[in-house]
Image (tube, rainbow, N blue to C red; front, side, top):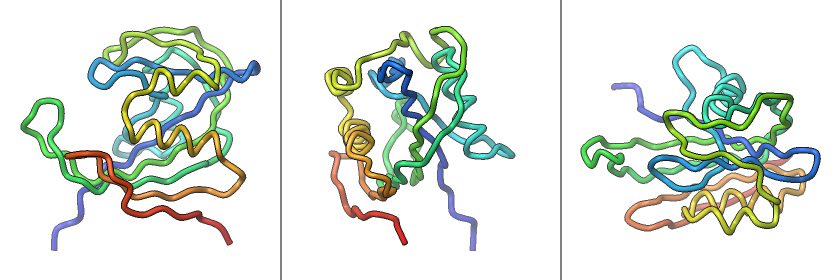
Length: 162
């Protein structure tokens, strides 16, 4: 039996001392909070800190986990050819500790946005749903399974607690 293929990723809600949230504009998918895939031999938190720095120029520390998400739909990557397998994403709250706003090969803009204005920037339904879960976080980690293609659909949602 072959090993399953999953993408493991992490997203970071980077909140500054004024309550602003770090957003980046991707070349392919609009405005999002930063994050990305864990590379071979890399741990989850180091991957998140690296991705935030690469995408935005901001150095961070990881504070706490707010959500775990499974995108179980198989769909085509932006190239229209490559199948994207199941994605497991861990969303964390992070704090900025330095750096300057910048762009990268993956991003065309990065900025601090007032927390209550963020949903005016984010258009992707899965990212909007995960951001809303962050806003509603009450100390209990959320778990959600969804698919994004052909349309966004939540398949399962629960809390992870004792």
